[in-house]
Length: 194
Ligand code: FES
Image (cartoon, rainbow, N blue to C red):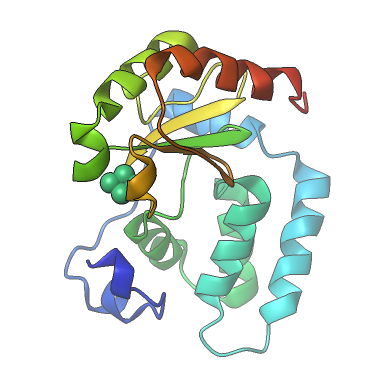
């Protein structure tokens, strides 16, 4: 898939020959379910569904809004959606697991994207990543125990002139050195919404 050309129309997901249902390991499943506060979260999901209820092709926008609200797609929310849209859960999971924009496991309050694109790589972004992994105590693709940070790697965030670069949520940091990483992370820890 060419991410730059993706319009989110869903046609490629329809045509994808791979059919499977995503199943988390039992302990991950229990953790994911407990992160979903039943009554209030259900009300949020119901509101999102109502926004798009009568629109054709509403699955993707609903999933995007749910993912944006929770920062991931809780399984109970998808079960709720399955009932409301009268769409099999396996179909919803197939779409949800097809796009990188969606996560089926809880993600941290701040998503850190470290660029490992060529421009950043040659300017030392692997050392930035190593320092982040050391500081946060997680590997890329993982979330810190306190659910504050999820560390991810990406290929180019569109500011190659600032290489090496990373993004924390909507904030971009460029011309980074490993020595700056700790202070940046601390600034988010101090203002954390715990
Ligand atoms: S390669 Fe890192 S921002 Fe483009």
